[in-house]
Image 1 (cartoon, protein in one colour):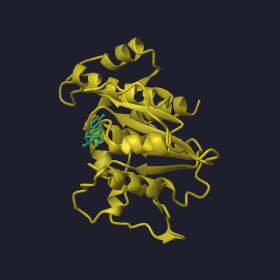
Image 2 (cartoon, helix red, strand yellow; image 1 turned 180 degrees about the horizontal axis):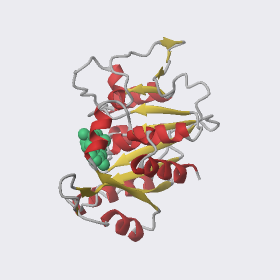
Image 3 (tube, helix red, strand yellow; image 1 turned 90 degrees about the vertical axis):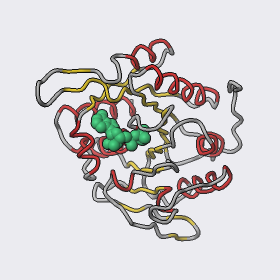
Image 4 (tube, rainbow, N blue to C red; image 1 turned 120 degrees about the horizontal axis):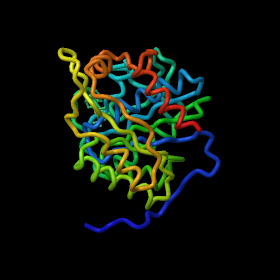
Length: 259
Ligand code: ADP
């Protein structure tokens, strides 16, 4: 496997009116979509005009997380109009471009094309766009950095060594594309047993913070492994809507993203 040293930028609109923040991970299932949705909510609550692009072709889950299944975007002048949800966050998702339940098996150029449609849309007065990327460093990420270079990227990982090795690959990828990395978020850190009250660490402890230190990246915070996060997410009511410790955790991450 070749290590990527530099990625050529093909085209980035110079005077883009919108700030793009990409959320990436080395692998799937580490909570990237959960973080993206909650980050969007926390930013909205902090008064930002935030929009969401769900670019995860393997598992577009934002429609569910942000409670807007089955809504198809309309188009005007050949550009898509983002769909507004109850949280006031306009959104476009790869899932909206495919038939419900249909597998998205696009080759590179098609995936790049789809991404372009989602980003080059009627975003109106949205000034901050969160892009929930697919896991890893594939075609969509390459299109993203080459044609719609994000202003910054955020990486999420579990504390587990294996996940962190993959996260380091994602970090290397954004470095090679000269996309500034805001920092690393640790998810599924520490599980508080609802029965005995003991905290255990199914995926290890402190790994992401140590990895961030080693890579000289800011550590943005840790999110516990908590059943209420999974349940609230499945219900389309992201926990960042609440003022409890979890909501506050997401608000703190959102604050670091904007400063
Ligand atoms: P990814 O986007 O990285 O594939 P998801 O955000 O879809 O990951 O999360 C994978 C699963 O784990 C989802 O069912 C989600 O609800 C759950 N999950 C994510 N973070 C947490 C957490 N901190 N506590 C409990 N469940 C979580």
